[in-house]
Image (cartoon, rainbow, N blue to C red):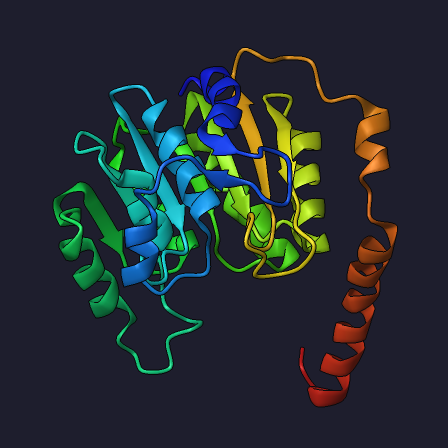
Length: 263
C-alpha cells in the first residue's frame, strides 16, 4: 500500500482540512449514511475509500468491527476490483440479533456482497483461522474498530501484524480513548516498522468530523530504527498504566475471596 501517496493526497479530498468544518469534496458517501445506520462520518468514509484506492492490486482491505457496514461500504464504494475481509461477532449494539442479516442486506444494496468475505466471529479466532489457511493474501489497509479495552486494542494490532503487506496503513477508530492511545504507542514502541502518521482527535464522541477520533499508523518493513525513546515516553499515560497495574491486585484479591479453596 502506498501510504505516502495516500497521506499526500488526503488533504486535497476535503474542504477545510484540519478545521472543524472539514468535509469531503465528494458527495458520494451521503447516500450510504442515508441508508445505513452507522457510527461513523462522511470524513471517515472518504479517508478509508482513498486508502483502499492506494492499495496494490493484490492487497486486501480488512476491518474488525463492521456493525451495519457503513465503513465497509465507504471503503469499497466505486472500487469493484477491491476485496475485503470483514469481522464482527455482534457482541455489542445488536439487541435484536439481526446484525448479520442487516449487514448482508446493506452490502447487497450497494452491490458489494461479492467483494466481501464476512466472518461472524471474534477477531482473535479470525486471525487464527486466517493463519491456518496459509494464504498469500496481504492486508494493505487495516481498520480496527473492535473492543477498545487495552488488551483487545493491543491484540488487535499484534494479531494483524503477520498479515500486513510490507507497506500498509493501520486505521484505529475511537482513538480519543486513553486505552486505545496507550495500546497504539506500546505497539509502536515494540515495532520499528510502525509510526503514527496522523492523530485526528475530536472534541467528543460522535463528532461530525472524525466521530470519536482516528489514529493512522503506517507499517513499513523497510524501517529498522525504533521510534525515538523521548517520544515513546511522552505518550505514556501514567494514570492509565497505574490503573491497569492496580487492577491486577484488585482482581486477584477478589478472586481469592470468591474462591478461597481454589488450588
